[in-house]
Amino acid sequence: MNDTNFIPASVLRRSFIELEARARAQSLLDAGTARELVGPFERMESPWLPAQGIAPQSDDGCIVLKGTISAKPVVVIALEGAFQAGSMGEVSGAKMTAALDLAARDSANGTNTAAVLLLETGGVRLQEANLGLAAIAEVIASVLGLRQYAPVISVIAGTVGCFGGMALVAGVSSYVLMTREARLGLNGAEVIEQESGIEEFDSSDRALIWAIDGGEQRVGMGVADELIDDDAQKIAASVRRYVEAGPPRIHRSDQVDLYSQRIAALDVSKQFDPVMLRDSWSNTRKKGGAA
Amino acid sequence: MEQFKFDYPQAKRPVSNKAHVGVVGSGDMEILMEPSKDGAAQVTVLTSVNGFGASWKAVLDRFFASYEGAVRVHINDAGATPGNVMLRLQQAVEVIEK
Image (cartoon, rainbow over all chains, first blue to last red; front, side, top):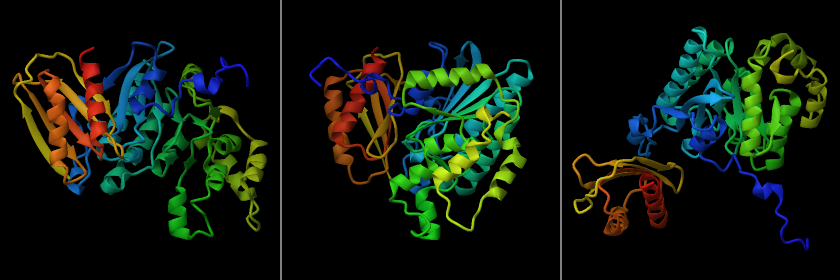
């Protein structure tokens, strides 16, 4: 404690979570290769938010950068968690779908183009209702179209996390990377409490929420592949590894029998806790979504 | 939601770059700053928070009292405070004059 020159690594590191979505996307691509598609000056804003008294954002919270990682073509699609909780509307959904479809088209023509999704999202944008739901269905279809050629890598860094329909997008990804701060779940804590009562889920109990939805638990259960530190350099290095690895031999979401057996084997007659679940599922864990 | 438009005809030094800063998050805003088409600065503001027209005018008047670039500015706002607005404007200038 007497050494005043000591600065811990946690202070020196460049936080990824503290970056805005565009800067996050840029930090992953090879230097000087990033080119934004349908950028803010195109003013592709949500037509539905102003009609409800809400200021839109010029990129609708969805930032699409094309570039390279390890000299391989990649498209990075980043959702801005600070704008409407990264929710998916008509425009942001269309941007994500179009980017994935273009990557699939390039891949089908011989230039394999991976996608990196930076998912900070509460799911469907409720103000755009059915259009948001349709958008997410299209995104899922596009991920399934692309992942047969090139990996679709989802990064959930926090602090919004990844919920609702977009959790399904993470589910069909080739690889999922999470920080300890990040959460991944179909229904968010507040939604569960609102629908099923506080006895079912206390949304003010942060320890409970992270024990179930948190990155450590999700990686421990094998529904995410790697626990990453909140460090822009380390995250870029991890993403690079998965881009270089290509798609897994078998995607996690294709392992229907494995997960059906696991769920069937759970003893629902008594309450099971997150640690027990992690222990029992980690035995048969398949690293990297592949068998 | 309210919309405002302000003109600053005295700001007519040509600029050639564009700048985009900020996020339309709670208490924050985004600025799109680009060269003006008619050679003088103009600002449009779209804000979720009603009743602050005079504050917007005061902050922008003060900003354009010292900045003379002929920029077209659009602001999407989710409740940025006047101090925050000024910082974002200065950040956009830093980018556009680079």
